[in-house]
Length: 588
Image 1 (cartoon, rainbow, N blue to C red):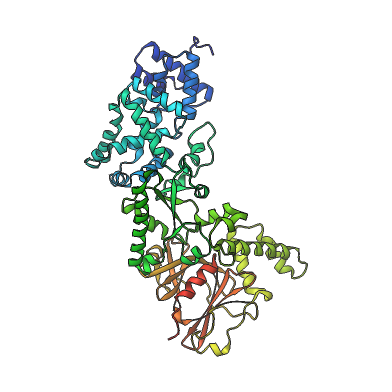
Image 2: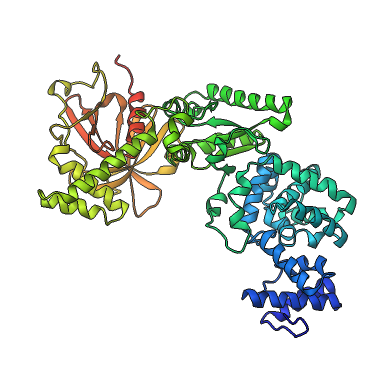
């Protein structure tokens, strides 16, 4: 490049104004303007006001044009996080880092609505140039570049906040006033402070999960961003980590995890990571005193290791099933620990489901007490393989052409159509039907028989439950409010299969005493009808189809003589039926 030739760009006026604000009309300023104009032209990009690029250039003005441009390009692509703007991705991630190391300070700033993009934006976009003297920046950058870790900008910000936590916790005023005070903290750094400043940043980096840098590097740094999952991150209750990190045994570089498995007991007993502690979410509602005791035990275990050796102390990682419906209590449990200002709290991303998939063929050796017969994921995989096989067989069959046409179309439609056609097949296919409840059992609730749940393939039982009812005919409820009732034990999204073969989106709610079927109202999001309400002691039989175990029929005694039957397509039907069976009271 001929740097003596004037370089023009459509944003040259904005560039010139910003450069002159920090460098005046000096020769260095003219040099900076040329570099920025050339960068924007070469990269075919616009210059955004207050982007921090002019500040990044300022400490490099003593270099030649070529070296200055090369260093500037390397800093922007390798060390300045992408998307440093209001509500930008780096600031959602930094908040979770602060929550991990200092939950009390993070909570204080959250309550003041002082988000990281208000106080740290200038730090991140200029690598602290905007707030420190040039000599301080050169000393900081020298150590920074020798480490070669672009995430050091996050840890330096963490050091600034943690070191000033006492001052911050005493701050008053609105969020803007607090943010301005915090933004000014690096102004007081001197050259002799940098060695300790960087050492503390390295200290925090060594006590942060590897997933923090490994999972987000490609999304924040470099010229070719990888696929982003920041939408989920912005809503995360705590720092998510990959299950692959949990499988890596303790090493000198990583952290030691105390895995707190928050799945229901029957799922935990069917397979879990060695050494994991079980914190049964069901006891949160059924036995609060026991749950509180168990929480205290986890905290005591963590605190004991911290007192013995801070470097090898336990970091808590909470694991759910990875299935949204079953993990409804997981966030409540995590919130309980964060409310106690517990440090080093994380969650396993996608839970046991992701762990099971990662282990794959090594699942038996990687998990403790793994049981293929009762493991929820194994049951799902078997069901999926069975249904896929039957679809292929049905497509190739030359008989029963109507059924073939229905099944072959399943392969080309959306998942909703798949469920609808599977429901129809479950109702009408003669070889997939269920057995009648014996006449002798119709005059009384089902008791004195070994198991209320069975898998049969005999005569078909009539299914009641017709088309959707109007709001005038049914009580309308707010589903979320009901799910938060104190007597609510479990809640599962299902599809009800009616007698005419139609399917309706519903919610099965299990309270301590009754089973509810709530039919969703499509036109009113979050609302539903109470379709039925039965006490558990009126359940006569729960049956499943051998070839389609997710199609479940419930049969109820009505008025001690008449049998009511309702059919559902239930994901994780084995789990749901086990939960319902456990709530049926013993015979009096």
